[in-house]
Length: 497
Image (cartoon, rainbow, N blue to C red; front, top):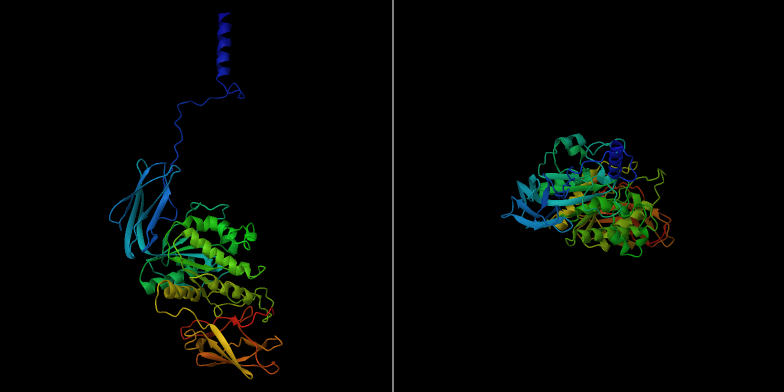
């Protein structure tokens, strides 16, 4: 009897020690198992060895740590350590005082008690540019099957790419529903060499190379580009919300998601400015004129988020190409889109545009002429951001003077000096004139000093009322200034045809 009672009592004890919905044979884990400890100490993903720190601006260093931790930062280029205390949310940030350019490798260490120190080396101090956009910014120096065969003379360009003071960080593609505090999958800063130059963004590389060789300072390029992406996908939501005309783009084409994933994590970084090569996805948007406001909103939105004043913004007008393989040289919807791109300069101070009418391939919207694009972006920067005495724009239309069946086209002072053609070849005849009938007919153009003289064809109602140049989808032009910069396409009318 006593034995039976003892057995029953043991059974009751076992049952009481089990969860209500667990079988009697459940194994209860021992209560002595150590708790999980999470490592919270980190530094922002874009801050790494081999990076370039922006010169002449305070350099922000930031990351996460356990709440109220003391973080100590030692920068070899700064005289004394800097400390910060993490917030209750576990975030911290400090500014290292501004420093001039320095091509000697520097070190940076970040430490907090009880955690493993973070140490970065081979850091240079120079200028940092964010290079963003879609596939034409993405195209590398070397071949990329099947859509890109590499830049001109890519093998020689790669072999000569020994520029240890050029550093590149290529952001990984990431669509996010809200602005990310850090990259979900950080990339690595690389030191430019023949071993990796073939995979670098060609436009960004040639831009950086010209800046570096002309300025003799280290250059860092952060490439944030995605093939086939829309302007609204790169525009932060606040910028879209601030304009009633643009608020309708919220929710379209994954609006703001590339900004959230690929630009937002950079906004605490001190930078020199931006370059932008995009537009092919938006070229048929309706109404077309929205692109001017949309791109302007992107620029203003980025500037606001980076909070470093009127950061320079230089962008590329899309190149000529037969978008729909129509073989119809009179179509002009791409010309009208280029016009909306050109208008961004008037809408946003501190913006500049590269012309590529001489650097396209009719059958390929990924032309191999990326050196011209990168060099011209650099010329805009050298002239406007650095104040160097270089010519950065080609011939720009100013006015025209009709005289019977001839028209003299005048250009903005200084832009058409030494007007010529590439290789002194015959002019590619892309000038059209129209009379009161608004019918455009091809004119014959000749160079006269720094002006163009047009002869209207027979049948043109005189006087000439309007002039257009390269105002079609894919005219590969050859008119340029003595500086080798192409004439900008233009029209003098606002007619719908």
